[in-house]
Image (cartoon, rainbow, N blue to C red; front, side, top):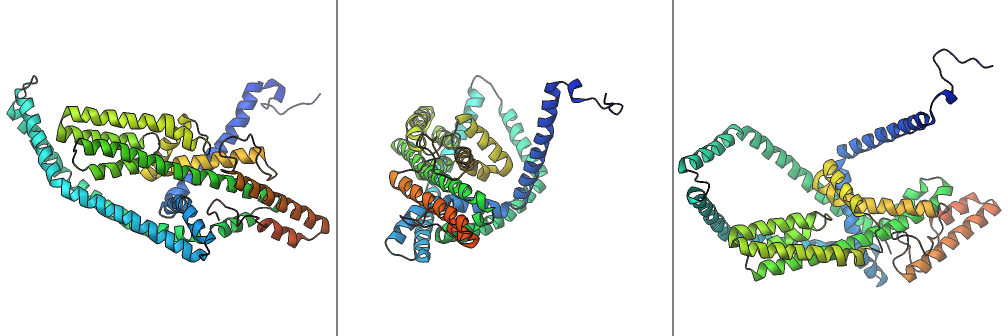
Length: 423
């Protein structure tokens, strides 16, 4: 008979549910501590991390054009520079048109807003609420008092905005240079990162990045197309009803569509509010119907057809990811939350399906297979070459040649895409 120390129960005397719960509890506690530390580190380095994520999304968007120039014979640096300059010209040209349209329409919008406020005041005085002029003046006086009492807070907010502006300028140049090197040397950067891993894990991680890059590029292209359709549909409705600031509102809808589920809805609500103030309730209801119709087209036609093959995410996971992203990093967090979740989903699914680094099966879920047959054949040949080179080098005892074969395998149809750049 084995005697246990006083106060220490044996395993049989502890219920199974309690033992399992305790085992899960301390493991979950460790995971929570690690995640908290990771989020804290990201928050400290947000000036670097956020531009890095934005540059990765831009590289996924611009890489097809850069790859086309490379296939035409342009050097990698020239191709990256050309596409980046073209993208900057396009973006700043569009911003110039939007700002100019906003400035031109601001005066009319201000007059219409003042007229709407006067009409609202008249309705309060003569409407069913029977609010007196003295009560209105009292509310206005309270607002002025609040502004004077909180002037110091507003000043500190302005200083904070100036600091944020400095971070934005720094982040812009960081995004610019990072995007250039992602377009120029993305595949080499990914190979270097995989060399830091143990040799047996390199093929699987490399392939997981390969499929994740497919997911990211497909997501970015689909999001741009969906955002364009949203902006075009709502912009046409605004133009037909002659709502002021049509172009800026359409640009706002386009930018808002990059935040899935809620972005286009919120920006569409702004368009409805402007139509209500400037044109009245009937045009506002028409714009609301246009926004709802565009959202239905996006949710039931565009999203399933365009993103269904590349990204397999449940709507609840998308909403939760956006909420967490906004909580952690604000608007930028909501922007990168869904593509980050899609990439992790693809990588984890692939590593579960193929821990040995082989090609994903033909019946793999969306996001774990190439986007076309040519890429599938190139990937299969590349994986076979890697495996054959690795087996042959191990059998011959040539560790150095094994490492070289794994790091830089031959590519039958050009340099294979990594999670940073494709060729």
